[in-house]
Image (cartoon, rainbow, N blue to C red; front, side, top):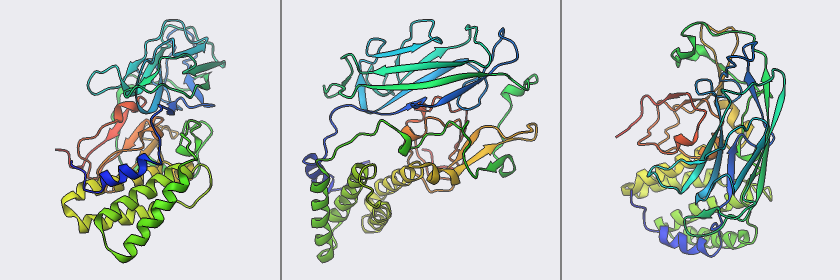
Length: 366
């Protein structure tokens, strides 16, 4: 989809104020400080995993996901080191790339737990060090310059129930009666939102320049109703929110930005798909920004064969979404309902390595 005029103008302005060239780690799963629970079957032999608090049952592997702000290469055991009792074999990092490239924004590695004699009621520590050795490079040649560490715990818990034959492959039923609204998250819910992410790109020097440009375009639009001016103002306000929301407590400009794009759909219908996509991305960013903003969309899933509520289901249905975004804030999701939207071909869901149930019915796929 071609971008409307004004994009070049916006790029010229923001190139002077926003520097995003160095690759940065913006998200991970497990996230720093989290605790992952594995479910045992009351015996160390035949030890199994279940989908509880972010684990995988069928493969008996635990994924580790690194999500960067841009595509990078050079992720290996020398540039990303993992220390843990759970590590018994050499790990191979894999890029999640659509074109089978060795450069990708998302990288994943799998801890194989199938053959380990894990001790029940024991907590294992995992420590990941990223970028302490050189070698991580972006597609435009910039080196990773923000060495960081992720630490999390893996707790082995005794199982209280056993799956009956065939129960593990039962079909998910997307009915309201099977979904219980969440009033507050439990400690065991491995939910991570943007405000909890400790890998947030920071840049302070350019905020005032963006504010000055915003004032200029607001003054322009007070005298002339200009499509290019509206588009550029919307993107500058978005850039300001990105830079300031985590630092100086400024009020979000989300509502103003959404209104600008909504107006542009009417003023410039030729590019309405582009504006609608931008609205979708902004809406998803707002929903996933904090636990408080996320909780209205979260439910516990339980069907008629279960006595207790199980996994957290994120319901993003009926939101008029035409594009998926904020995937870096959704790495924890195991059940996702995107039904009754306006989605076309979707990209990025492969980063959600825990996703086991997905509802895409009633969309507009080509």
